[in-house]
Length: 323
Ligand SMILES: Nc1nc2c(c(=O)[nH]1)N[C@H]1C(S)=C(S)[C@@H](COP(=O)(O)O)O[C@H]1N2
Ligand SMILES: [Mo]
Image (cartoon, rainbow, N blue to C red; front, side, top):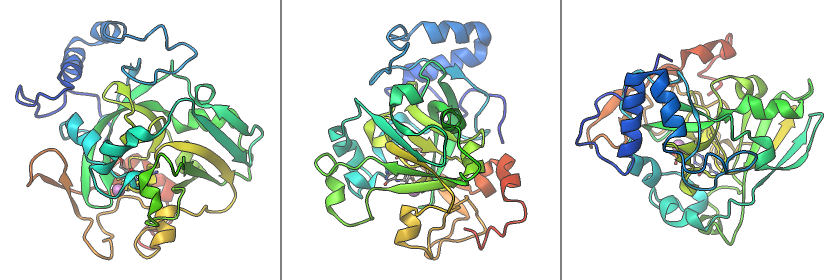
């Protein structure tokens, strides 16, 4: 499923969004190869100097192109990526996060690291993520609600963060928590979920090279509604595993409590690997709506969302039982 990057398929002059310059740059880079890449990375960036040792909190990011791309499908328009969201801390409506997430303070931002690791404590995000080592990966995010988007994420492999803390052999799982602030998050007044939002991965899933900690999308710092300043993107799992606005990471020995499983264990499991064979109790998972491509655009859902290289992580496991 991971292929050499080609221009986003199916883009025409009519697909003009506020990010048309970005998309044009991508086309030029694809056509011009390495030379264009160097030019594009040093050219239009406004805050290249300011980035060393610090963190841009808005605007463009410096990043390296990678070969991670999905083979079929155009990028989801920027307006849909940033206007149709799930971030229940700001409300359950798809347009609530875009409306209300600006209230969240993302600077300064610190992350508490705890549990089975040699190094633990509270760290500034700038000390945990190397903003000079960002890369872009085009991943499809498949929501359990049976829709998907293709997004050019900017981030670092989660493993590059976790390794700094030297987890011990007792660290069999990694638990994540979302920031919680009742004054800034209007949705947490309602007991829709048990706040703070929590997620987890087995340590080998967390260390897998596909697992990304994203800090940006479409070449820019993450908008708050997409989980600023740092959120997971685990592309072979349903979207709810990709926890947003993380401020706690813990190395643990038992499977951690995760919010959606806690809320409805028959419907949502710990693994939540995309699996067209296993229906959600209330709807099918065999196909998905393509967000931003018109009302009838659908595609067949693929096992592991098409990221076959993770299959070996689950060798010998019954994935219908371990949903
Ligand atoms: N903290 C937090 N993280 C979250 C959610 C949430 O409600 N709260 N929703 C999840 C779900 S269900 C999906 S599909 C993705 C959506 O990410 P996006 O809005 O950036 O597309 O975020 C996930 N991460
Ligand atoms: Mo989702």
